[in-house]
Length: 386
Image (tube, rainbow, N blue to C red):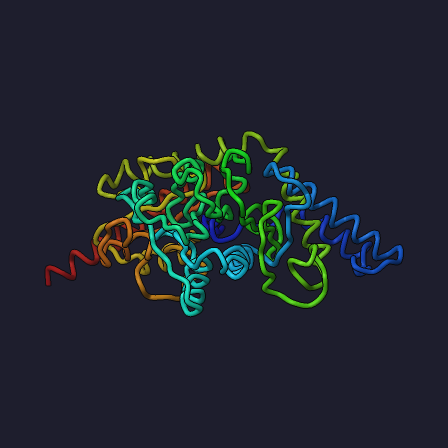
């Protein structure tokens, strides 16, 4: 039985071209990039070339890109590092109810250090209410953190108008763009943000590599102390092969200009097939702009964990939400913030499409979903009658 992988929001398969580049660099560039000898300089050139590639992809300067171990470190660094460097200006941060756990847990840590956090509520489509932003803004607000697109529903957030909304207030703006990168087009200028998080493994690159954009002039305290790598902002010997793989994945995004359109068509085809036979199924954030990849569906009367396990047995890989919290039994905080009850939130499944999915897979997956859902629903109904 062939497995159909529809969990690209959790992680994407590594592109073979990226894997070859990682292997090539691993073999040919063994020098420490901080060393002054020729082997070290060769690794340094590779890293700086990659930095330029990532910077260009988001419209930044190379000096504004710091390589990290991934999106979680980027978010920790953006929030905790910025907060610690801004204590003299204030201790108040604004975010949304839908942020990734790496943001929410960073804020919990900062709260223990005396910082305060206010949360923008979500509307039923999962979009933050910017009408509340001005009322939450205070003189001592130092940072506003809003993800560019939600990892569970795929809803695209109004980051572009945050700066316009707060006017000349000096608060910094951070956006977690980990899910959005490669799935919608954006750049630093139009987002008008000060910090932005990226991760390689969401764009067919290696796990364990990320990049944080820090606008020139923004002060940030390093979280990892040691050497002077990454211009003193992130100590530790750089992962040359991983960084090179990240850059190769970014280059390939630029060569797939029609990829977003093709993936959107797959996602829509999949949803249409399911809804045609199950009109009671609801698409979360279905009436707002979504990432091309995401299809978060609510299946009434069937627990999501049961549906997920049976889909896995039938050869379809999906998710009940964020992979980083897949071991938790609590209902999704994102769906609850959208007004879903605990029971409703437990009935959602996230399917996410990617570069390597085909129309045949979308068709087969939709058929399997309908069959599995129908059997489970029928079984639950029969049990209730007894």
